[in-house]
Image 1 (cartoon, helix red, strand yellow):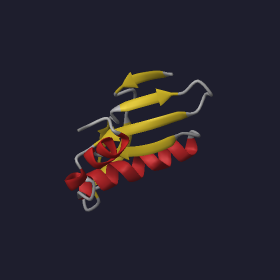
Image 2 (cartoon, rainbow, N blue to C red; image 1 turned 135 degrees about the horizontal axis):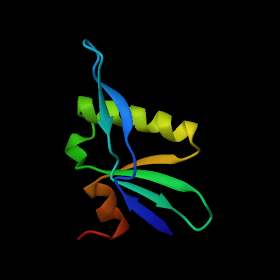
Image 3 (tube, helix red, strand yellow; image 1 turned 90 degrees about the vertical axis):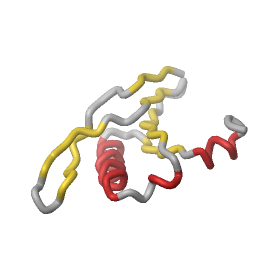
Image 4 (cartoon, rainbow, N blue to C red; image 1 turned 180 degrees about the vertical axis):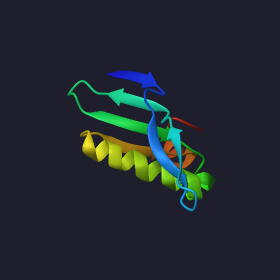
Length: 86
C-alpha cells in the first residue's frame, strides 16, 4: 500500500451564478497492493452536506469515475465504527 497527501488538484465550480472555478485538493490518494486507488477526503459528519463540500465531492466523483478510481469521504462516524477512533 502507498499513499500521498493532497496528491492532485481537481477543478470545480464554486459559484454556479458566476461560474467561478476553484481547485479542490483531496486529502489522500491510497494505492493498494492490487493496484486499485481510492481518493479520500476526511470531513466531520456535520460538514458533509455543506454546499461547497458537495460541489467538491461531485467533481471528485466525476474525476474518479473517469480515471478508474474510487472516491470516499470518511467521517468521525466511519472512524469510530472501524475502531480507529475511541
